[in-house]
Amino acid sequence: MKILGLDSSGLVASVAIVEDTELRGEYTINYKKTHSQTLLPMLDEVAKMIELDLGTIDAIAVAGGPGSFTGLRIGSATAKGLGLALQKPLIHVPTVDALAYNLVGHRDMVCPLMDARRNQAYTGLYAFDGNQMQVIHQQCAVAIEEIIEKVNEQNRPVVFLGDGVPVFTAFIEEYCKVPYSFAPAHMNKQRAGAVATLGMQMFGEGEYETADEHRPDYLRLSQAERELKERQSE
Image 1 (spheres, rainbow, N blue to C red):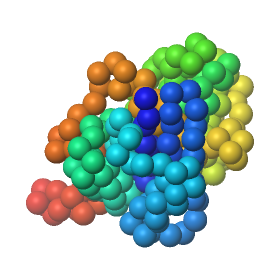
Image 2: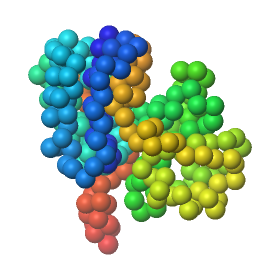
Image 3: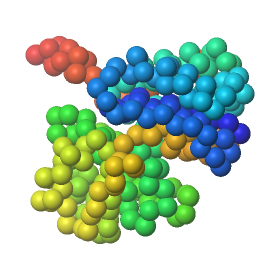
């Protein structure tokens, strides 16, 4: 089985090809560039380097949200376009689940933190039994106070990762009451390899959709929608 993974849900743009138990290629960039300018060229480069015929992939796994509204739209449009052109199914992989899967097999509880602005995080709580991921608290958009409270309630060591870590480090240091650590640089941001690997599991369990059916999961309203709602309620 061969899965193409795409993630443009945050600051990172990432493309990967996973075949069975092998990561054939991965291209990840964490730099100030627009994902619409980078995602397809990155895919083209990976395909050339590993001599990949995109027609041979079985499915396309895409980080389906939450995350940056613009980034999710770009990733979704790219995946849908490829799915329609190649006539391949899409696998909607929850962004926070895939971020947690970077640390598959970790002994501690895993808490991804994506900066959602307004002192909120896209987050969740996870644990691993070997390669099997247990969702303790499913992905959500909540205030940092709320997720740290839930971490403390679990009363077990935790490891944090994601672009929200530098934003919330001071808060974690002051209010996290359980032993904690931070994931190292090569594991602490979105990676399409994790999206593709988790997507392969989901595909095997029948969790996939057509390109037409795919929609990003934003979890909350965009800033423009919030402002419109506020004006309408005045």
